[in-house]
Image (cartoon, rainbow, N blue to C red):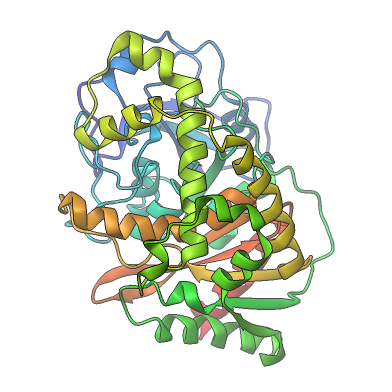
Length: 427
């Protein structure tokens, strides 16, 4: 049941069909909304393709639908199809040699971001109201940034990943995209099973100045726009500035196992966050190998060159320092919890700049991605929730910032995003 090419519509969809909402539903929170799902979620009666024809060829039709998909169907939404993704979820670029690269609706000559590429494009191109993706290393946050839309990575372990092909279970999350903050929040209330609660007020916004210095565009306008809106809402006394790299380096002792002496000599680098990214990469490779190594060895799938290189590196990974990775995750979670408190939010760039051009030379792209993973690994390794929000354009290209809150504060973060963006829209 593998498809030779995606169906029309910015190249976002793998397969179009209609899954109506629960027939017993009346007026429900998501009634009237349409959505699409990444081709990593099981949908009963369809093959889950995982971005690769050989995977689709060697796997059976799903006999049940992933709980995350069922939950939004039961809330009244209508599913209109599955979306293109990067092969085996092993890229943040959005390019797929088999099914094509979904067209970035905000910048057609730029990558859409991955691995939830089609899901982001479907929302950005107004083909659906929201979509579901997954985020292990950045696969919701990155395409949200590149396509100029909202993307939410929830706290790790909060949303069920049952019926979702695993990438690396210690990092995997089910995330979602929307254009409007009210829809982002509505979908979150369903997936997170949030109960009505007393709205909480922001205690502090901590701006990670060193992270903004990683941007390849001027950082001041972004910080000024974000801080100005927060000051207007909550007062200037809520704003703090910090060097996140120095804080993490001092408070997460296990990072010493991953420090790279060369990285510490680079001016445009944050050594502690580079070490965090190295630990995240090791853990991701190790768990990917455990999940899919046997299949890769048996089938020897046809993979794009960059994907193949990553997959085979993963399959050579040993368990050396893996226990340290798990300790590091706990240390980082504890340290950042102390930094933010219950109702603090960390502000940082989602990625180091606007989306790269299609078919960017691999070495150039690698430098950009290394910086990106320094930023993305903060929420990834701590398990914290993160929202990527668009903050306009730079020279005609979408740019975004990210807001990070402590594990379990997803509802608080969604409320804050809605209030903040309403204020930015009015200003």
